[in-house]
Every structure is written in C-alpha cells, then in structure tokens.
Image (cartoon, rainbow over the protein chains, first blue to last red):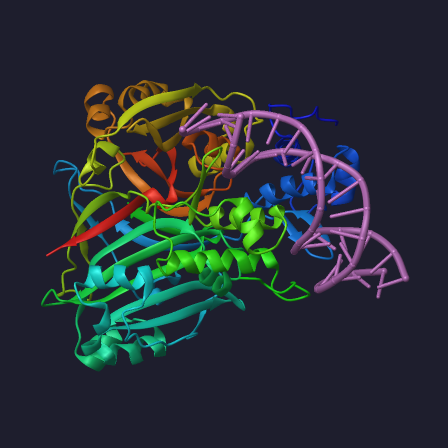
Length: 267
Length: 267
DNA sequence: AAGTGGTCTAGACCACAAA
DNA sequence: TTGTGGTCTAGACCACTTG
C-alpha cells in the first residue's frame, strides 16, 4: 500500500486512516488485535512517522482503536454498554395516538435505574462546593436561568457515580440556598425521592428532563477518565416541589459509548 | 506567557491550550472574536508552530474554537440549539410515584417534534439501498438482532433531514422485506403513523426508544457536515405492529451540540 | 499579492511498560 | 534493556480566502 502524494487531493494521513478503518470494518483486524506499530506503518506507507500519527489520532478520536503508551495500539473492543431502562406502557389506541402512560422511572433516583445493570454501582461524593461569588462560569449561569434564581443564591454540588472502580457518571446539582438541607441528602445517597419526602417533608416532581451530547471539557474528561473532547451523553433537568417552585437543576454527564437511556414500551 | 519546558510535566501544547481555554472561559476572548494566528501564538509562547497547532486542534475538538482555512481562527459561537420537545403530564401523587402520562409525542414522525423549532425542516431522501448480501457491517447486524430477522431479509433506507440548507438529522431504517410498502411511505414523508395506518392499514406502536451518544464515523461526518469524530446524539428504537411483530428498526443521528430531546412535565 | 491554516519531512529526545 | 507511543523542533511547500 503506497498512497500517492496528496497533491491537492485526499491527504495521505486520511488515506492511511481510511485504509486502516477498512481493515477494521472488514474484519481483517478484529477487536483486541494489535495494530502495526507507528514505525511499521511509517515503513509500510513510506511516510514520516508524524503523518502516521495523524492517521492514528483520527482513528482514536473515532473510537476505533485504543492506544496504550509504551505497549502498543489495539483495535478497540466494543464498549460494554450500560442500559438505563424505563418501562412505559404501550400507547392506547382508542384515542388518537396521544396518550401514553409511563410506569416506574423517570425519577431522579438512579437506584431505580438499575434494572438490567451487571453490577450495582457504588456512589461516592467527589466534591462539595458552595457557590457564593458571581464568577461561576457558563454552567452556573445556565443553572441560575433554569431555576430563575440569581447565581449568588445557589449552592453547587458535584457527585461522581463509580462502577467497577471506574468513574461512570458525573452529576452536578444547583439548588437555592433555602434548600441547603437537600444537599446533605444528595451527598449521602444522591436524590432518592422517597427519602427526601420522609426526611425533609419535601415532595418533588419533574419539571423537565432532556438528553443531549457534547464533547468533554478538561474537567469532565479528568473526572470521567476519558480524553479531552471525548463524547459525553448528557441528561439535565429541573425538579420542583408541589408548589411548582424549582428545587434543583441537575446535569448528568456520562461516557457516550457506554451508557444508553432506554424507554421500553410494555405490551 | 512563556511556559517552561514540559520535562515530564504537563506538555507545552496543553499548557497553551488551557491558557487559551481560560481566556475564553473568563471572557477575555468572546464568541466571534478572532484568535491570534498560529504564527502569533508561536511567537508569543516561543514554541514551534506545530506545537501551537496541537493546542489549537485540542480546543477545536472541544468545540471552543472554529477554524476557517485561509481566514483565521475564531472563538466558537454557542450553537443554536434545536429542542425537540415532548409534553408529559405530571406524576400523579396518589399512587406511589409510579404513574405518569405522556401526551402527544414519542411518535416517530418528526413532524410532531417541531414544537419550538425556528423553521420547519425540509426532509429529503438521500439514499435508498436494498440489502441482500450478508456483508452489511455492524449496524446491519445490530438491526437484524433488534428485529430478530436475518440481515439478508432486511431492506435498508437512509434519509437526511435538512434544516436551513444544512444536514440536521441522518436517519437509517431497516425493515423486513414484507414491509417493502413502508419504504415508499418513508421515502415520501418519513414515518407518519397516521398516513401509514390510513394508506397501508398498518397500525404501529413503539417497542422501545433509546438515547445514546457516539463519535461520528466517516460516513456520518460527511453526511452531517461535521468533522470526523465529532459528537453525535443518537436515538434509536424498534416500532412494531399491533400483533407485536417488529416493523422496523430506526437509528437517528444528529449533531450533539445542536439538538436536545426534552421531556416536559405539565402542571 | 499577502496572509491564513493544512500537510509533510527528517531528526531528536523523552516517558512509559514489559521482558 | 528494549520497544512502544508522546512531545518538540526547524523548515518547507501547499491550498484557500481576502484584498
């Protein structure tokens, strides 16, 4: 394999990357297989090692390979997916396809979400920060907007959920100061609706929940042990009390490839 | 700013990247602002231009900056988010927090999902492929598994939803051959449940839907006009008929930062 | 024409992991 | 100790965009 000079066409590093990509897609290279070393590829394609590294970096970003410093480069194993399942009763057909009933779930207590999980995750509080200044960055401002509360009056709490000794989900909560008692409950065992109702007399309900995706920034990458710019699946939302006042804004971030939120419709 | 040699510590390119990141986070550089050129940064930090480029690449992957070839590098504008909203009636509190009702939505017709969208998207069919061979790759195998149908008996259809002249969502459908009539309906106006029921006598219902995130591979990046390895938000699922037989498996991919699925709980 | 980012080279030294 | 990937340099030429 000797790609022609790029000369205005496809760059050499991309030709190499797609060639390797094809070898993986067609099964010539299988998950767990050792890839040729950078020096090997440099010789095979008759290009500088840096050019090879550009190709390797692209495949790594794509999640196709795993690079282990000092050891070698390997075809990535398919990630072990953790499904977080909600049961939903099937749409009633009498009405004009407008009514559906959600069963259990869509609560914020992750304990409810453990249905088909291999091992129950251990939760551990990583940080606990009290906001006071206004210099809180974009996410603090977003929380203030979602809660209709000035950022100076918000408390901030980060927790990390760990599974099999590996950071799995990073949670950030923002609450008005008057709900400071909730912070203790969150720190103890995340937000279990029942315990809040029993312990604090708080009855909570979802206002909204949303799914999105983003690249991991430096903090998120560090907390989750993934490369900067890695793929995050994000679920955020606001929970309020029975009076309709917002109690907290929550933002959960997890590795994109290894988490999946499933809404299952019962028969 | 003159970072010390890396010498076993933080690499220079990362020091530069975090320095620029901080300038952006603190507002010294604002969205739309022109960043220093690579030559400027190379001089400012007294390093080789390639080292600067490594920092720039990291910030680009992170979504913090936008690089325009031949023109310059700019602080990224916050993406204009398209929210796809489903209304949900609030949890009834008489029962033990187990019942919820979903209103409109959670259908597969994207037309229903247009609630708070600035402009109605134009849908356009990009490809139409009939599967026959077994060499269909991982996604075809996944579809076969979800549908409990051999991949040789599946049809495959890709569609692209365009908004404001820009690819917005890529859809892939897999159906058993006996539902070939559905393909025409999909090609015409995506899957509108009502039209299928009226036109084909098919009454459909969700089996499951799921949210996940992944890096864009070469095809997905090309179709959506984003860089390879960019962040995708994915929603996939299976729809079946009233008999409980699966009719199709669908997989939707959209730019992560510019799409958000919202479940809104009514009062 | 001038300035920007994009690609590529040859060579060097380093940090890390495994034998 | 050996081989792997990680970082960095100095220099070159190119493609693209804008005046």
